[in-house]
Image (cartoon, one colour):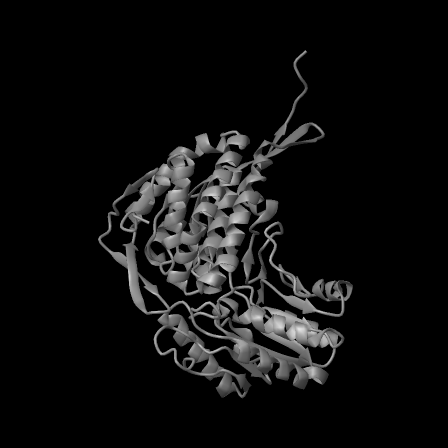
Length: 475
């Protein structure tokens, strides 16, 4: 990675017009590992102008050529997999042996899957005397998160490239390193100049400039609901398309007749992996009141097994920053003050981990759904356990949230679980321990956002639908 001091615009590594910099801090050591330019509104304008110039040619590039390029990019990602793992691990704290399967393998698969969707703009439907087809939406601006930085990068960029869009990408201030690697990969793969542009920087400067730029046709954002609202406001005057993957406070219904040990252990692991910094985390575990004591015993056993650190046997690394660590501590204190029962973990750092932003895996029981720890996204390794008396009450509690990104059900079999899943107002449901699937759409209901990522549904987000009404041919 040779270009941390530059931006990637119009196929070249160029200097920023800003003299400001962003420090990249390793959350496991609290040390600065590099710095990148904090781009300016002028940098954004240069990048958008380049993307605008490149759009017509790229949008009209035959799908076979776009497919070949995406596959070359995926092959290069595979070849540089260890570099991608190291970049994600160093900047956001996920232990390398976990970052491989959690943060990098899936995005490589997703890039290859997007290559199979490039024909979407070459399909025509005949409806009576009309023809209907899809065209690339135009120039896109992307604002990516720090918690799954490569995953969300590929979910946006791969889909947009497949659809024939050009783009300007702003990585998270905390985790820009894998984006620099991806710029190098796209350059080596032969992506035409101007199709992909990288401008790191602060949201207030670079993000706002993207939202307000008149040549940007669409914005895609992943992050907090609060920030998503501001982005939608900034895009409104130019009537941009806006897709957003926002916050969550996802419910996980465990039924009385299921394998309780498997269900509870799955739920604990789901929250604690990535140090709780997962938008889809099943942070509200709903357990039948009749089995609550059994569930708590299983929770204690599983949490006691979790090693925190960066070694080969660690399950949890640090949270991403000092600010995030403090937010987690504040919410743990809120839970204590609200009268929830602290089952495991609590305030402070794990023993022996005084350096680094390490938090203790924490579980609260005796939680009611009106408590702040049950309603607000903590984004840390904190699980809330809520007791319920019957299934109707469980579903009501599950849906009593402003969010609707993810959910989970663990029942005696898939048929029983799916019947419950259909009653939950969320865009995603993990049934009986199911895993994330890059062939399926991802996105939320309510204040968890709009639009979908991955699969052909994700590619469709980056297209406009056009129809042509045919008249009778001249005689």
